[in-house]
Every structure is written in C-alpha cells, then in structure tokens.
Image (cartoon, rainbow, N blue to C red; front, side):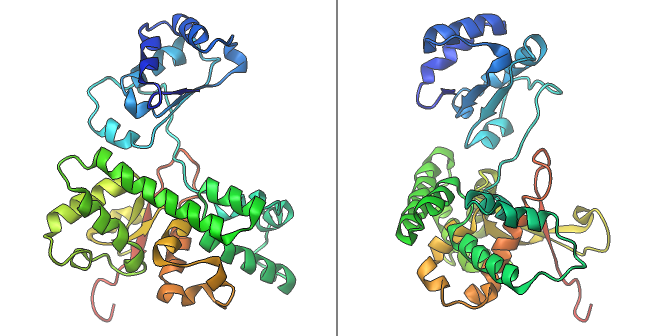
Length: 320
C-alpha cells in the first residue's frame, strides 16, 4: 500500500514506464520482496499524484498478473480536469457505497438472516418471528448506517454514544475537506447545502430553503461539487413512462439524499436511544429518513462497475 497524501515523495518511484523497474523501486523503498502473482498493489489517495493513472496501462499490458487498485477521495475532480492520456480499455471503474443492509447483517454475524433474505421467495409469507427480528435490525441500520467504522464499532460494542461520536467525527472530516475542493466557492456555501440536505429529505430540493439570503448559482455549484465528491446524491425527476428512466429525466426537479443514513440521522439529532420508542421508520422526519434509507440501498443493487443513479416520479400535470 502506497499512500500519496501521507508520502508525496512516493510518486518518484514511478518515474519509469517499465513496471519491473517500478517494482524494484517499491521493494527498495518498502524493504519487502514483492511477488506480482501473490500481491496487490494498492495506490491510495491517488488524487495527490493523478499522473500515475497513466502508468496503469503499462501494468495492465506488461505485468497483468499483478492487480493494481487506485483509490482516492476526490478522484472525480481529478478526472474531470485531467490533462493526461487515460489508459482506455485497460482499467475498470468500481463505485464504492456504504455497506448495504445485507452486508450489515453479515457484520453483525447474522449470516443465516442474510441467506434467508437472499433466497426469499416473494410468494411466501415471512414468519412474524423473522419479520420482527429484521425490523429491529433495520431500525439499527437506519441510525448506525453503513459507514465501515460505525458498523464495526456497533458490531463489537453496541454503544450508541460511540456511534454518535464516529458520525460527528466523519461529518467534521468532510467539512474539513471542503477547503480542498471548494476552489473559488466559499466553504460557507458547501456548509449551507450539506446541512440543508437532511432537512429537505423526501421533498423537492429548493435552493431558497438552503439560504434565502444567497442567490441560486453558488448554491447549485455547491451541490454539484458535493455530488461529484459523492457526499450526497441527486435524485432526478422523471415521467417514468418507460425504460430507461433517464430518457424522460427533468433535471429542473430533483431530490437529494446524503451518502449515508447514519450520517443523516446524526445531522438531524437522531440516536439509537430515541429509536427504541419509534414504532415505524416512516414516522421519523415525516418519512424523509425512509426515502434516505431506500435511496441509499437502491444504489447497492447494481454491479459495482455501473455508476448508481436514482430517479423519482414527478407528476407532470394536475390530475395526471
């Protein structure tokens, strides 16, 4: 694993286009022997050294036995303005989402429940005992969410206060990151939009409800940036008269969800202590959290190489 944010100097190991020479450099730098067929080369925070993405073609062509993974928190920004030649056809993109509900079940050691859901026949009634068990766990998922640190802590400690702290630490980290990709846009506008998303869940997203003192343009730009950073996700309106849904999409109308229901709940002040007394998920936030939950889980059902997209039905005319 090479982290280019922690160690910017590591990019100098890739000066050659010859993967064998690069591997010799990495071995000398890390002090460990690398067998390509038994290793994975993980390039972390690659947005700090974007030109290295060009080098991936030589690994794909000359050393296919070595899998190379490149990841970065703001990679989409780098790709949007890159001035280098991307190795088309030699790399694949995978889109990472928070843990799904099925993965959450596995993290809690509920592998049999996961298997039950995955093999479920829609013509069979779920026994009440299993239904109530799953309902309890999905309420936990609603508040814990799918961020790995939060799920890991919940699986080992079951301490609501620890989960709360992890969520607020993550939200603070995102806000600290705003400065990295704000450019000419003020951090305040990004803050405005991010804090407004949980309040507008389940409704058409209205810019004047974000900050009535600010014009639409900078708020729209802030939402574009947050969407590109995958901190939030747009849900575009469509008439939905047929497939594909995107054929009748109308980008003037949109809803927005946050990347994770746990972070969303923390922004709204929702905790596991409160959830114990809630009989239905839809009661929370007038059903907005239910839409957050469903939208988030719909993003996990396609194969990882397909960029997830969400739509909602919008009534075109009164009486339609």
